[in-house]
Amino acid sequence: MAFTLQIGDMAPDFNVQATDGKTYTLADFAEAKILVIFFTCNHCPFVTGSDELTRKTVEKFNKRGVVFIGINSNSEKTHENDSFPHMVARMKEQKFPWVYARDKSQDAAKAYGALKTPHFYVFDKDRKLIYTGRGVDNPRDTSKMTVNDLDRALEEHLSGKKLSVPLTNPIGCNVKWEGKDAHWMPPEACDLVF
Image 1 (cartoon, one colour):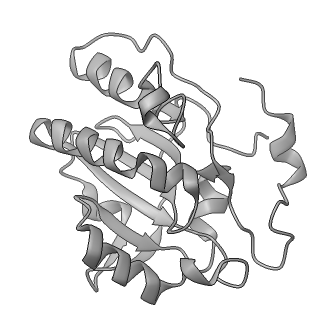
Image 2 (tube, one colour):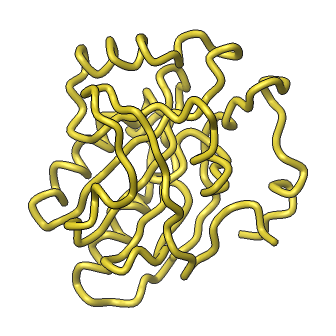
């Protein structure tokens, strides 16, 4: 079985605490026409380098029924900056237009097979996976990007088209797994074919 979700897979449930003080599960997003779940964090330069572009994507598509939730699953023992209090402070400072939630148990990251930060998963109204991978081809420095895969996937789906590229390789820092070296990847994640 593949480590990360495959195109056509159903969205697994999750239970995560957000910076707004609420706890969210998949059912809380039932009204969304499209649900984008992305694994992110506070410190990764690929995240911080593309946060403003992600903000523009959210602002562009939220009027069209697309809802975003960013989930931070990183071990705070590896990066103390990824702790919940730091998330709350970052959200207060940045005012991101998405739900920002903590997956302290890492259960959501395991269920989705999150590989990197950022790693995007786009689900249709039936919560079937239609796109997974990177947001853009140069998240560390979006001034050098040549393609915005997330924007294209959302635009194509909302226009009723079949996605031209449903799968890309996420680009970023690897998820920081509890009790593991900072660069450790699950062995089964190393056999992915993109």
